[in-house]
Image (cartoon, rainbow, N blue to C red; front, side, top):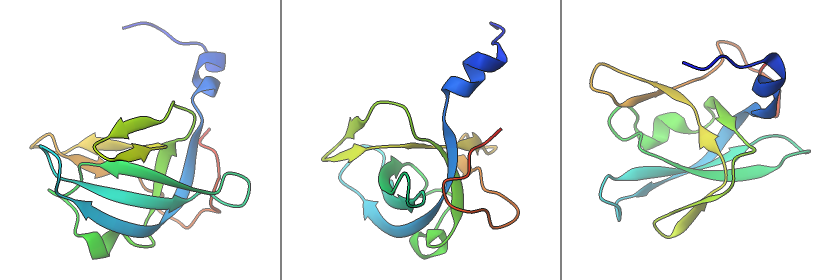
Length: 112
């Protein structure tokens, strides 16, 4: 494992946002969920595609706050452009569990 400096860590811009809209995307090898996430006035609403169907129902994701990397390049996933990378940890089946704050945070708040 390579050690990073604190300045390296600061290059990764991780913010909190609230999921506004959710849509199932079953047109991929591994079905995913398209998320529209509000990161506040300064950053705006961004899209992400995530393979969350094993642990989340679409209706349970609306208004959930999640952490995401907002400064990676956009990525084409099927027919959509994923603008941010939502963060999660693997469960016992190696399926993602989203990183989410315990308390409501202002959208756009940066992880430090």
